[in-house]
Picture 1 (cartoon, helix red, strand yellow):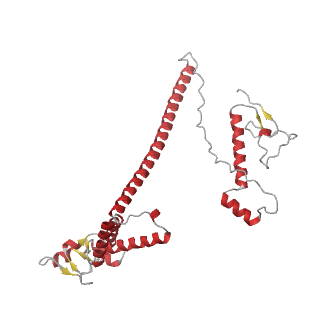
Picture 2 (picture 1 turned 30 degrees about the vertical axis):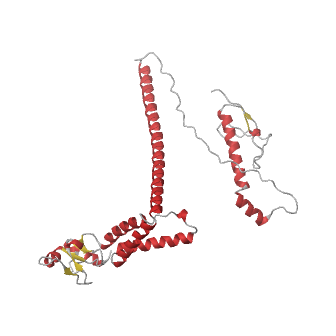
Length: 313
């Protein structure tokens, strides 16, 4: 903030020290921005309707005084001018033939916003230019405005739908937690009464709370690229360019295939089927099967090098 924003331009009183209210002279057609305290305004406008700013010579009236600073006033004016200009110059980026043409269009819009927000003869010329453009391109302006309204509406509906889905899922999770707590509390009361002898029937075993299943969504594997043999085989930088253009990465493909095989094995284990690590796809070059090595116990019920029988417990 400029030091002049805190001092009266006539008597020099400080706003922060003397707790005075300062008014900014902000006429629409000219730029002043100097501030005056309430005492100086009342003294100079007591017998006349206006007085001259001692710093820049701009006329000061009660209608041009504002309690806000000049920076705050210009921000509001810029927002109003931008809204006015964009209501007429509302062409979309897709309608331009090149990026340079679109950049020139944006510069023209910013110039109009600046002229309107500053006031004076430039603002009058900018307003006349807007009226002329709107008269000559009324149909295009209406179509672009309608398209913008439809795009904003579609975006709003998507946001609202996404928010509704999240809130619904969260509410269902809260309901399940509430039901589980009530069920656990009832089981604890039943068990306590049975131990104290108040009830003869033993409480049934409390079911283990099932966890939400995690769904893995894997991207599709890239198509197999046939490697040509002969003198015209692609190598070196040409091969890297072709792989970059087609999006093929052998390392990423290997990782995706390994992940898919691992999840398939987990599904078999989850279904209590016989799990054999030898059933894994031999596509993984890093997996080595040692039939003679003892099973490796990781505490998860899995062993490497043999079939893991699943118990019914």
